[in-house]
Length: 232
Ligand code: ADP
Image 1 (cartoon, rainbow, N blue to C red):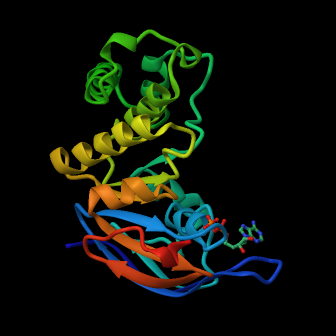
Image 2 (spheres, protein in one colour):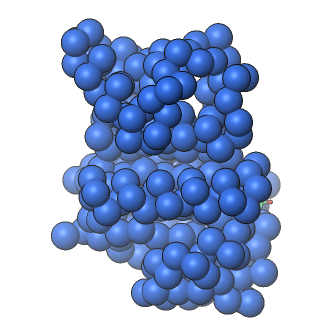
């Protein structure tokens, strides 16, 4: 079953740059996909169009039954509820504890307090941070902060987890731990994961599907890929 079907998508910025050129791809439910490519190849643009930060100029994006490119601004929340998003810089709220940061995502959608408690504690436990539940972000290492961001992203059980350079600020050991955590979420919960990355070692070790962008073109799609040279 497909979760995402992208057909003939073009993204052109106002300055005339064609950031994505006639891109078509399908991503199945439960897939784990790395998006790689050199700087300026279109990775961020690709990721952003999935959560409708950017609207393609032409083409179609169907995600979990929603027509993403055509969705009215007032309906974008329906898409966002199907997604979790993890960024390179964690984006935690500094004045809130780990618990509060994760619970916040559920409070925003008006969940019941009892439900919030159960789901929040479960997500924090899943990312291995039970002992840090009452800590504040500045009391945590970078890797731990990214775990909190992952807990927040998955607390509402999204179909898709989108990760934009999630290991970009972490050392190699921490990076591998974070990717192993993502792999375990993918395997145990079945969440589909799309991860943009520069990290050659991670891509080579994980042997997942790899799509390679170059100048806005999808130039390779490997089933169990490696970080090939043309990605540079
Ligand atoms: P990557 O994430 O692979 O580095 P991007 O998607 O950020 O690539 O960029 C793809 C191309 O689009 C680059 O040529 C970049 O300069 C251009 N670009 C990115 N964002 C904008 C923007 N907001 N306005 C104009 N051009 C942009």
